[in-house]
Length: 312
Image (cartoon, rainbow, N blue to C red):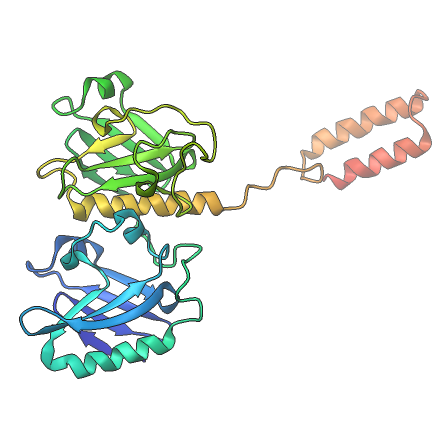
C-alpha cells in the first residue's frame, strides 16, 4: 500500500505487511500516546477494522487487535478510555470516503486466523529500561529485573519490614495493573506459586491466560489481600503512577515474562564439551599408569583414551 493517512493525534503509514502508527506530540494528544511515540502493527496482529461516526463532525477508523497480540492492551485489561486507544484514528467527516477505502484495503490483508486469539505477542512492547514514581515507592525495570524502592512517606509498615524488593522476571508468572484513574490503582507482580489476590478473570499471567483458584497450576503461597501491604506491589495516587508511565511499564514486564516462559532452556554441558587440554593430558597419563599396572585392559585403555581425546 505505502500510503499515509493523517488524522487527529496520529498518522497511519501503510506498508506491505504492517501499519506504522506515529502519534503526534502536541499538547492535545493524550500523554499515553505521546509516550508510545510510534508502533508498528503487523497485519497478522489484527482481527478486524471498523469505521464509525465520531463526535463533532468526525469519523473513527479503528484497527481491532486480536486478543493476546498486544502486551499493552493485555496489561490494560479493558481499562483504557477511548481517547487513549492506540488503535483509534479520528478523522474529519469529510475524509470518510478515503477512510473507508483504507479500511477496505486493511480488511483484505487480514489472515485466515484473524478471528482467533494470538498465541504470542505480535506487537512490540515498550522497551526497558524504564521507571516511574508510585505513591509508596519507585518502580524500575531493566529488562531482567523489577525493583521496588520504598518511600518512607508512603510505604506501609509491612513493606518497610520486608525491605526494598527485587524480582527477576524468571520468578514471575504475570502482572496485574489497575488504572490510577480509578480507585485503588496499583501495579502488582505475580510471583510463581503465589495465591491469586483478585478474581481469576482479573489477573493476567505471562502466558496470556488467567490464574486459577482451587484448580490452579500449582500449590499457592499466601499473599496479602491488599496491594498496600504486598511487597510485590506498588500503589498509585493522585499524580503517582500515571497511565502513560505505569501502563507501558506493566506491558514491558508482561512481555518479558511471556518471552522468558517460552524461551527454550539452556542446553546443559555434555561430556563432549571442550575441556582444558592440560586436564585431558593428565587424565591420559594416569590412564596409562593404570594400563601399565595391568588394572586396565588394552581395549579399555584404547576406548577411554579415544573418549578423552574427543573432548578436546
